[in-house]
Length: 295
Image (tube, rainbow, N blue to C red; front, side):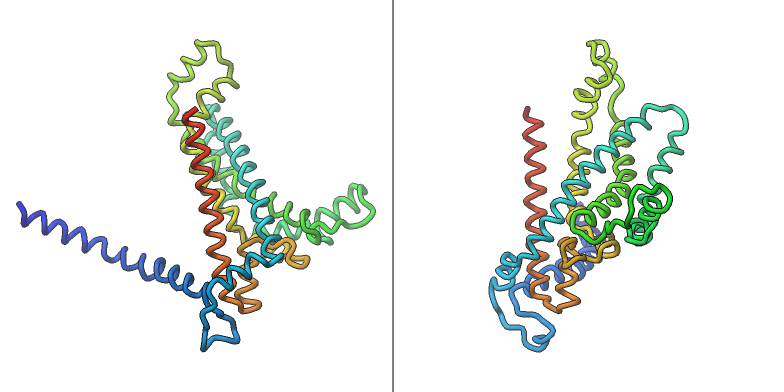
C-alpha cells in the first residue's frame, strides 16, 4: 500500500514537472529579472555595464509629470469602460435571458465585437474619427452640422473618449456571456417567492438577481479592471499618445520609454508601480464586495 502511494506521488510529480518548469522559466524568471533591472541604470548607453542605483528608477517614475498624466488616463479609462461594459453587458444578458426564441442568434450578434481583432477595430475607429474621416465627412458634407472638420483625435479627452467608446463596444459581448451564464444558474423558486411577496420586476432584480450573481460581478470587475489598466492596442493605433503623450496610458508610455528612448530601467520600475496599483485596486474591490456581503 505504501509502495503504491509513493508511486502515485512520483507519477504526480512527473506530470507537474513540465508545467512547473515552464512556469519557472517563462514566468518567474522574467519577473525576477525585471525586478532586478528596475534597480539598475539600464539604458542603450549602458548595455555592457548596468550600475546599481537603488530606488533611482522608482523616484524617476514618481517625479515624472508625464507618468502622472498617463496614470490618470489609465485610471479614467478604467473607471469609464469597466462600469460601461458591465452595465450594458448585464442589461443585454437580462434581456436575452427573458426571451424564449432566437437566444443563440442574439448571443452571436452581441459577441461578434469580442472576437473582432483589436487592430482592425482600432484602425476602423481611427478612420471614422480622423480629421478627414467618415464622421467629419457626414457632419460637414452630408448633414451640414459643422462648418469645419473637428479634430477628434488631436486633444487629450476627445482622443481618450474615442478609445473608451471602442473599449466599451468591444467588451459588452464578453460581459453578456459571463452574466448570462450566471443568470441561468439563479433558481426560479427565488423569483416565484419574491413575486408572491409582491415584488415587481425591478425589486426582483435588486433583491434577487444582483445578490445571486455577486460573485460573477466581482470576477468581472477585477478582470475588467486589469484589462482597463492594461489597454495598449487601441491607444497605440488610434491616437499614438498624441499630442505630446497626453493620450498615452501606462502601457503605451512604458513601450515608449523602452523602445523609443531605451530607458529599460525606468520601464521596469514602471511595470512594478503598475502592478502595485492593480493590486491595491483589486484589494479595494474585494473589500467592498465583502462589506456588502456583511450587510
